Amino acid sequence: MFYETLKLAVQAIRRNALRSFLTLLGIVIGVSAVIAMVTIGNGTTAKVAAEMAKLGSNVLFVRPGQFGPGRSSATAKPFNTRDIAELRSQLNGVRAVAPMAQQSVTVVYGSESRNVGTIGTDGSYVVTQDWGLTAGRNFLDGEVRSGRAVCIIGETVHEKLFGSTQAIGKRLRVNNVSCEVIGLLEEKGESGFGTDRDDVVLIPLRTYHRRIAGNTDINTINVSALDGVDTSKVQADIERLLRERRGITEGEEDDFRVADMKQIAETQTATTSILTMLLGAVAGVSLLVGGIGIMNIMLVSVTERTREIGIRLAIGAQESQVLMQFLVEAVVLSLFGGAVGVILGLGLAAAASTGMSIPFVLDPSIVLISFGFSGLIGVVFGYFPARRAAQLNPIEALRHE
Image (cartoon, rainbow, N blue to C red; front, side):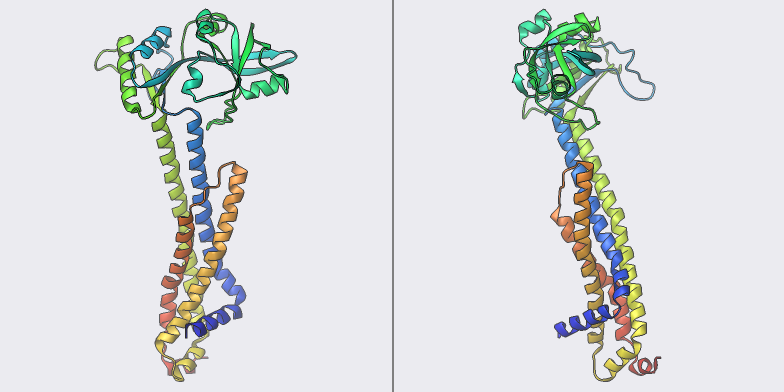
């Protein structure tokens, strides 16, 4: 019985192929839009999480000044080496504390030169950043204390200045300082802000202060907490210690800020997830529009086939059989449109992932939900036209021209 009903539904759809195609186009667009938008959003979320992970795990960034209306970081005094020593001696549950002083300088090797971000720091920097070395070694404590002219370079600097030549042991000029290359950082790629993290030169902090900056300022302090340690507690300890050192009394606002990378990553991920759901919801509206299109076309079909319905009712067909026939037509249309939409949506998501350089993160549940929702739309929006056909008066239907 159901097979015959399905066969009649397919025949009716094929008789009006163009109209059927235009009807299911709304479902195709809706399903493909939902799948493509959600998949692209998931890929974006995954990329944001990966980029945040590149900045280090369980890392807190301490910077002078505050952001916001009426606030300025220009008047806040920078940190110094005594602040670093105090944090290292007083903080518990911390893996490393690394100072950072940085500016962009000209780096020269042979006939090649380029403008590179140079960071004055010590051996703790690569620890806080989870940044390994592919060749050479890290700074020695003696080199940092004495201010020896040595440096560690990123992969981009190595490629642009040295090419295929081995850089370890060579000397390059950072501004007017000739320093020996002792290490090569592993490749990190672009950050989430579009900057090349490998276009960098690290030199000992004292060397940077004496021979490049001409001062003893430290712009940023990186603090890496041990695995399993609550970073919010470490953050509170840092704020307490720095308030004491900077003479900030109770009730006064901090003239520094502490950013927890874990919280930043969670906020970024939550934001992209919300945007993904919003995009999916907006795309889902087109599914409803497609359902309305199916209802309209089925109503037209009922009107065109009124005489056929009257004949079937007159020779003994039951109302439930007529209802089932038109309902099956609507469901077949919507399910076929859903299947095509799934294929098209996955194809669009794959193409967008390649073009936008984001991972292809497929969520099987959204595919099943979209396809199932297309079938539900066929039932809901196909029921009213089917019910109208089943309730036709056979005599009035036979008189219909």
